[in-house]
Length: 408
Image 1 (cartoon, one colour):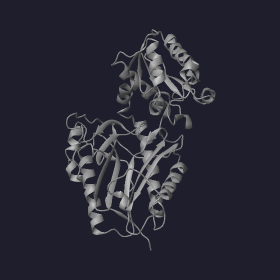
Image 2 (image 1 turned 90 degrees about the vertical axis):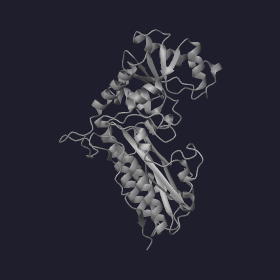
Image 3 (image 1 turned 120 degrees about the vertical axis):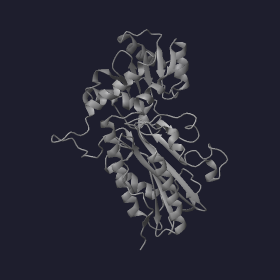
Image 4 (image 1 turned 90 degrees about the horizontal axis):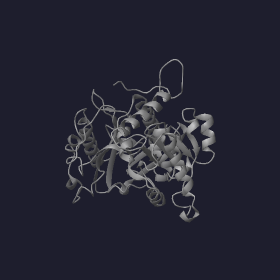
């Protein structure tokens, strides 16, 4: 598999991302996974699943995922039930689904009381799709996430509920070349954001100001959502709090940041650690241990190997001073990445030795490790495509040594 980025615009002189092909490939992968089950259709509320199945997107109504839904009948094409005028816009702009884009009738995560009876329109939407596709109204429905009101309503209507999330995660686990090209572009926007962050770091700026600098660059380069820029500095880096603050950067601080953004529907998950000024020898050693740990895991990620082979390269929980793997969860970790932040396969000593998963070409994973001592902690994360030629890193901002951000 040959990787490498191309321009992000559409042009006539070279083949780039073929979105029409990608839309068809994604639906076909869903259908292939449905064929392995007895599900009659999928009912999807998860934002990543809806994007994957229908190639439609909105902004704020996706925050809690329950403002719109997709229905994918086993015997037909996907439907999207959108937020208000979204449907009218999609009928103009989305020819691949224009005749199957309709207004949604949701409970708004239960904000519309059940006694109002508005859920009946939702049930009518579902039955309409089933009837049009020759499916019995007492169908076996695969769901990903539902609010409690809809769970009760569907059961009372006689539907059998099944695991639709399993179908979707399996369909999403191996990426096509078009998907990988998007993910390379997304990683490149984070490369640029880290460059801006490295230029900005100096004594007296706040963690949340660093967040703003990164978010601005990500939006400038086309990010749909900047989901998280988590910045942690100084004594807050050990133990890892998984949270940003308004702390002022001081000379000698280690600063690590995790950047999660969304470009054309695909996530990044990508950490770097920097130093404000010249790092001490101890800080270099902490960073070096995190880096060595990271690449032991990445180098084990070969086609045909398993997730157990990866975690066997990583230390047990006592290395970080914890009593069990649950407390150390995430300190040496890898996870599938795509339209969801956490996809298959998931990789941790908490479960991967007992439940190994084979690595296949086209999987994309984010590998992340951590080391800390005293008041200093270092976190590094790289995005990796599994190929027959070996693991290929697509996150390009330098990580082989601790970068010092000069203060003079």
